[in-house]
Length: 417
Image (tube, rainbow, N blue to C red; front, side):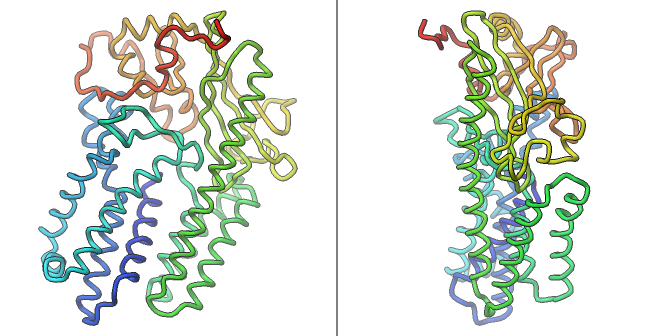
């Protein structure tokens, strides 16, 4: 997830922890405790993304691909990160250190805020299709949620608005509420969000505002409601993702006779449970060919056909004659044996394959099809072989299990042979 979302969620949970704990009667201590819990939970919710200091260990793009969401996004390595965050906080915030050492309730709340903040970061990063490997060193596989868009405004409309409604200044509440909700309004006007998605966001925000307006001071009702709505959204996205995966697999195998789908990476459209972009990889083991496809799928063509999933994002991309439920945007075939030979012969490509879920390799370069034309900063997954022809084999390559280990090992017998 984006760091703004991580911050909103961390602040909301930190505020909830403070309100659940017994009230501190001393107003000065109460204020310090509250800001300490908010800071620690929000900081912990973002801290793992400091893995950017590890990127220089490998030449681009390998540094980012293999160290982003790497060791810092594992449960084992959360422990030293938590200790570093606590030590740094108390070194530069003596007043917080004093209340932490003197008051066991504050001590418990602070430790819990840090722990839950780190767990929230890993859990939320799991929700999209980039992947994490949280159980390293016991399990080096990638895990993909494939259910929530990486910048999902539903969390702004729930957790973000819940935080804003705790501000004592009415001017600040109005300003930040308008800011958070103004972004999806502008996105809808520009065609990036469909109107039903905007209605969903405004309804969620309206519920939070109404609940908070009727709540007493230090009430947890609005914060708990925001959390419940967020969890309900995630659960529904998981259900819709599973349904979309099954239907896309059926459509692909019907279209490409003889190919068996190995994997489908899914991304939902923002605040839109019916529209999904997908990238799939399928194998015909008789021909020794694997096929990559990308496209868009709608679970409800009556409400949102694929052409209306995001008019701005998909403008001029949907091929003429596409069905209302599925549109194929790209198709690439590769040779299975050549991929395995390249993996054996080229150590840089072999390192790259520890990240690539949808590998598209040519004689000049390798790309993960998930990220071609999928990012505002361009295709960050591209490995250009000429850039590495004079480079020694890389050190500091994490031992992640290649996502396409099923293509790299032999034999594969999908058709019973």
